Length: 294
Image (cartoon, rainbow, N blue to C red; front, side, top):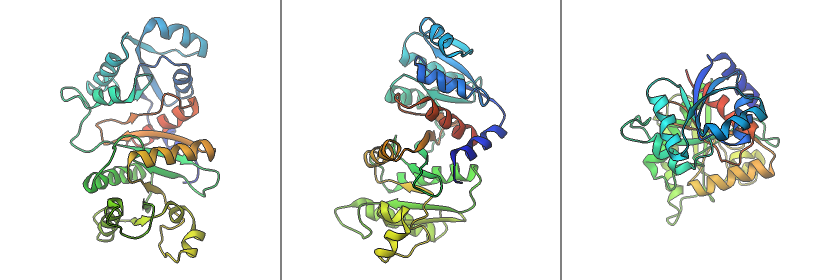
């Protein structure tokens, strides 16, 4: 896939779904929701007194569940999904830790027993196809087993989008094993797991690879690295959340990339973005979430 618009087209083929939005008191949130009205029916869980004038300003009509406190709004939004009233959930202006605590609540949260992970989709003018980055938003320092689950979550997303062959680069700062860099060993073990078919048919995973090798055939040729993933990665598996978050934001801001992001592994898609993200990013994130519902 070469553009996010292809993902939007897939989302357009899905039934329109109800989406609970936790603490949506922000113009960029409401503008993004207005753009996505053909995809979802938003349920705004937040402060009615604050929301009504903002909704009038952007021209949005939607159901409101009046909850003044943003932390409580996150919990009420999760309950709407766990009860079956809504089909997916989106973070608005509530902060990420409190939002995720609600999502993971043992009583009414959206746990499945699987690891939850974040995946970012990016359309980058300098790259020849869509690039997915994981996990740049949730798991801080994942070990091998967690990276395996993060990889499986990413594979599930791309499968839902129709990918038959998936090329994954487990990136590090070097292409060799190094005893002071555990991420190089994790990448090598994941590569071996893929070779043995443990990640499923059509999954090619190579690592450790430098980021330049993952996205540039020229760099691979210069460094004499032969791999079907080199210069053609669909997914970048990052070592930790710090490197992934910095890399993704650098690409978005300096590379003029279109982007969106969701959390996968829960009982329902979770649209999770930065509070600073644009309405367009929120729209693309909603489209990605909807497109992954089979």
